[in-house]
Image 1 (cartoon, one colour):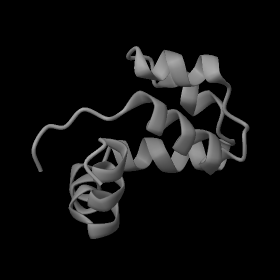
Image 2 (cartoon, rainbow, N blue to C red):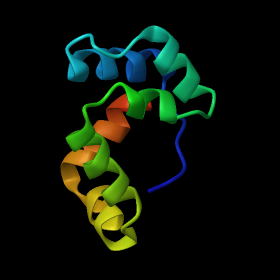
Image 3 (cartoon, rainbow, N blue to C red):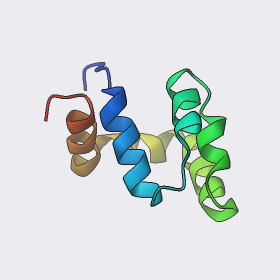
Length: 81
């Protein structure tokens, strides 16, 4: 997949929807500015561990990124969907 820029407004809306409004705008802004820890802190411990495990497993991350649903989501978030 080509390196595509994700539309910040679409990303914020998707994160708000996925979290049921539990993620603050300041956490989203921090993540967009390179600090993903703000988003991780908004998750419960179980989900935080899942994300950390996934990020630490290169093969699992590659499987996720090659998944058609993931590609579709990234395409939509980048404004090309």
